[in-house]
Image (cartoon, each protein chain N blue to C red):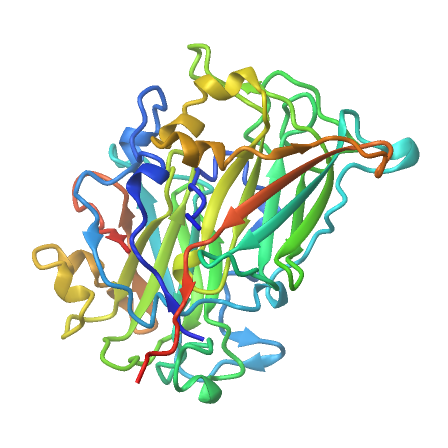
Length: 232
Length: 178
């Protein structure tokens, strides 16, 4: 199946150089990017990444005596393409801070305590409806070491492969109603307000099922439309 | 629907997501890839020349016959079953990445090449470029008229190709917007 990739509306994507994010002017090209029409090389891509990497289950909050500390939540995500068609069978990598805002990573030795019962990483495959579910705790906010009052709001990181090289996506999901969302330099690098809103998960009012966890829903749209057969 | 906005990988990408063998493309599902085994290695640096550690590099390439392991390639049925075509590496403290792979063949209408993606803290968007083995007629290479030498890997040894990636500054690597 051939995939069509069209240029994105730049207002729906983050700026590359962001005031107050000191690494961005050192690491992004000075020269304008070279515009290219995709060729077969970029309109193909790895389809069975699950056969090349180790999967990690989507339940990262622990159970019983080994349950992670924090607000237990279920996150229901669907991965779609630009036609709204489900992207099934694709690998999704997830990572997040614990409830105190601490990552399991040598780069994070900052301020907050680790939680021995919280692992913080999941690597899953979407089902045929493009869906996956993560059982986790809500991540905490944490200060960025710029020292000027920038805090990252609670967020979850996603890396998604999709069907072709140009559908590869690295993104972050935010939570509704968080006061820190309004000042976050990464979320607000996206100029279009509606595009920023689409990075925020939807809170699902509790129904009693599950009885012990909040539920959030989110949608990830990968680049690419199916090529329709040409009319004779 | 409108594609989701990108965001940076940030400084906390789990090291275990760079699987031990993910930078070795020379076998797949117990079969050896056909073709000449080569190493592609390079150093990734930012504007001041400082090497970048734990930066994530991914590659995607055709097999030794120039076929992509993907149904959009008309020759897909003949793809090498021992070659997956995708790999991931993280840079070491000197900013160096290494892939062990096979020399790709020429896909239809193209010079042999390897697609690169770079993901890192401070990159709100994935940076994409393409490495070639030598100059020649190619629709992507021809878009980069005066800087095309920066897209051509250097043959350091018979089976070692060096491809340094400069994110910004002197000898800045050309990156593509597609």
